[in-house]
Image 1 (cartoon, protein in one colour):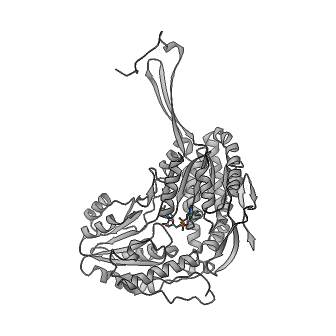
Image 2 (tube, rainbow, N blue to C red; image 1 turned 180 degrees about the horizontal axis):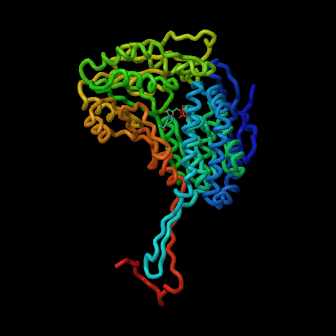
Image 3 (cartoon, helix red, strand yellow; image 1 turned 90 degrees about the horizontal axis):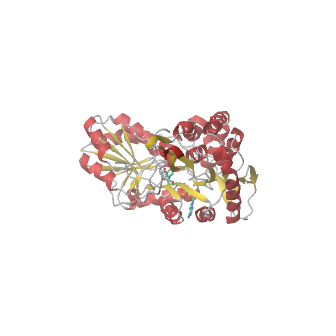
Length: 499
Ligand code: NAD
């Protein structure tokens, strides 16, 4: 049995707590590795190494720090197949999707190469007689991030690339379900030129997370994961005086107007609803069919596509649409929620309950499910299922569809499919959701825009990546300077104003 490590101060370090989590191969159900769960003292040793390394790193000029990111991009391309394979083996997603996971992280690293421009301060010449004023963005110091299982490459890179290029040290506490890729990324960052201690990986569970929250040296915490943990980390981290941003769960609605192209809408729904087995925070989990007959026309196209989805292990390469879910517990939770849907009166238009894959009977595969006649009081509507289960809700008109998306507690992503520009524009303006697609089902913004939901999908002020990341990982210092030629005799006792 492989025993995974932490990556502390430039070296793989064995866990010393005696506590481990099982890392599964979700396709076979086998435990393939043990992930060490850090104790407080292991976290403290990483923080000490980060604290020692960070000042010298912050003093490296931004262009040189950016060059480390350039090199890192090259190395990610060099090792793409290796990274994708390790990712799929622990997560279960298909190989093309695993490459997408790496590439969407890599794109943020590319954006971070612009750090010299992003970190340029503001300067006012002659703000007063002989007075100049300038603002600079300085690194926070030691920063930390806690990431979910579903994007083990992308989300760590969304955090550590901007943190590190801004001059911080970063401690990553990845998901204990798929920790191998984060460890590989830390090695590659060092190969790219990041000094020891600047990117460290400390594996663990709540104990490691609490050690981050309680540590006075750590200045900021980024979190991505489920909403209850996001709420906890935000409250605790803020109470400890840290800068915190937490991104939580989702229930993303796609509104299908009567004038939409139903072929396009159905194609969008199979990809966005079932891709990565529905284990995406931007997955579409609710299809809202607007107007008389729209649901019937949609389901006529959608049902055959859902019924013929190819479910299988990542080793089948391009030949599968989605793989297993991450754990037996995740599978059981999905099955439990599907049963509540049936019990509470929804119509199971595609029933994936009997799905079996020959040779992979112990894998965590879940067949595709499609519900019709779902109503807002049902558990399958209220809760995030995080599995290959799509719910169809029928509404009479556009206002009712908009209201559904707006009344849901989550507000990560949403989409509208229509040919009518006025309706699309109205929807984009009024909906209280952070990321909106118009005829685009998964509107994940590109690296140079920012990513973030609204309502219970987020806790904090700034989004991930794009310009917000440079704000989150730096603080502003403003200097007012006057040299002797501008000095007047005597003290001034009232606040200076510009008259
Ligand atoms: P999770 O909340 O179970 O775990 C996320 C992280 O928190 C992991 O590193 C885990 O070790 C840690 N953790 C778990 N329990 C903890 C506890 N009691 N105290 C402290 N830390 C704890 O989430 P997950 O299952 O890994 O990921 C799926 C969730 O993440 C879904 O809800 C999904 O919507 C969400 N997600 C959100 C976004 C976004 O940007 N909004 C992106 C990806 C995933």
